[in-house]
Length: 221
Image (cartoon, rainbow, N blue to C red):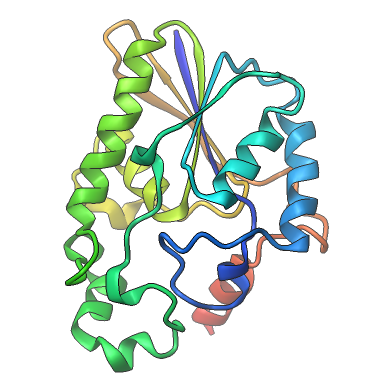
């Protein structure tokens, strides 16, 4: 049995500045550091054999926290970087529908067809993370693999691992900061979902509860 864990990075500055944070490489927040303290303890008993991470700061610091009690080499791989948002990068979310109405509509209502003029198409993200993850799994059969990545990248990867086409990505939830997903693979590398977006290590503490929960509640009103 091969086991794959996916962890989204902790809270970063872009998460609280309410801007599109794709390849912008900003540092983590105070809450992010507290989230990582709890993540380290959560990962203490998880039997990681190998750790891969996006090279972006927020992911690398998360990978280091998950690795606190393991002492493994962290392998950086751009396959697990966040989407390149092109002209969306650094723009406040409230301004996106005004500046780029058609493209923003794709992000909100037709996610699989999202593409910016100067960044990545969602199809490219899907293929990139799929190829990177399956390469890691194939090279580590019978082991426990951890990949630390980003919200959009992990959503695409979960879509693939669930056996869904990119057009069905709407059936996959977003993973919150330091949320953990787990998949297992049989000898033929067929994936099975164990759990998705487990935030039990941070969800009950106001100092670490994911920021995204607030804007999700706001959207439902």
